[in-house]
Length: 424
Image 1 (tube, rainbow, N blue to C red):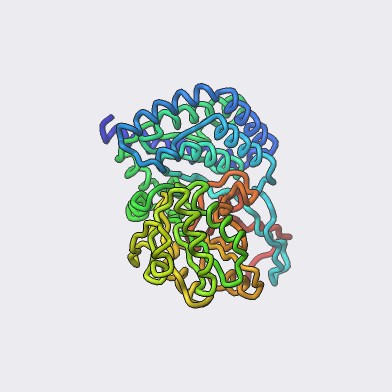
Image 2 (image 1 turned 90 degrees about the horizontal axis):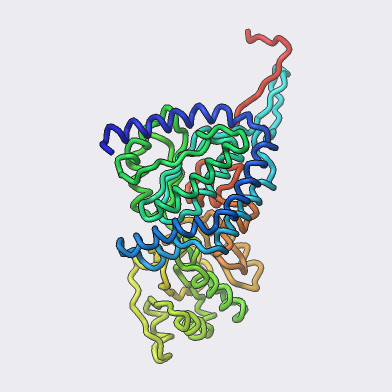
């Protein structure tokens, strides 16, 4: 396709999405939920064909020399498809946010004034590698009354196109405007440039992918962008941490799925808990994790027979999405909090401690979208929070922060009922 043809295609998609969004805003909850249950069944029924499409993308991944973590994100299995379908059902079970009264005000004039939740309108989602995003974003946008324009990466093109066709079939079967969810059928970068300029028809852009994609989106978009730059998450082992709990939480946070944004990248240890450090380091090493250590941690671990890499200051602000962790020893809780606030991306942080006062101080003073006490960072997730699927995890402050579910995909408007009032 030429650039002119791509421009015409994307502009047309955006205009049709805007028209569809006006219908979606008034779509009954029962019809939305019927679509969601139907889509979940179709995903399960189409498991084999989805896996066939996914196998084509995995072959492409080899030619693109994708990293192991990126390939892992791309890979579908019957179990992951089943989990995706369950996420769709969970969204169906959630309350419809559209039309909910947020607040009732009492203006001096005395008329009835209410703040009502409404859809944002048209949301563009730009993402890489993870094809489950196609389903997650489509269902969350539709349940919240928004039209969705999806633009996936070339590494997942076949899988995304298959999922998009299943969504289209389900929309048609349930009498919903088929422009409610559209997938841009080209991976040409020009399509992204055009999409980011459609501020007259698209109301919000959500990029999901590497930092370079997100920065490109922010720098080139005329449309408001909800950002998630990186997931630099830390586990802090306090002086009063239970050793068994500390190991369990650390290993789960780092190793359960290292390629995702809520995996731990830093281990921070209170100097009074350093007796635990050799055990924790060995547990990480036994699972294939590279250990990057500051000078204090290095002194404590030298002689333990573990391979160590000297950490640079930049390492503690790096999202590895791989089996690598940076380790620092700090003198006290305040130093741990300062260290995290300096290096964190504002995503998720966890403290392991039996000291309730220390936990309260950490949860209050650490500046992140999600803060945990005695729990794995891996729980920072819309599905785990009971939001059903999530459209992303925002490290922004306006208007959404943390895992974004249905409520975060809505704006609001003021609805006023009067009895003939006029302003003098």
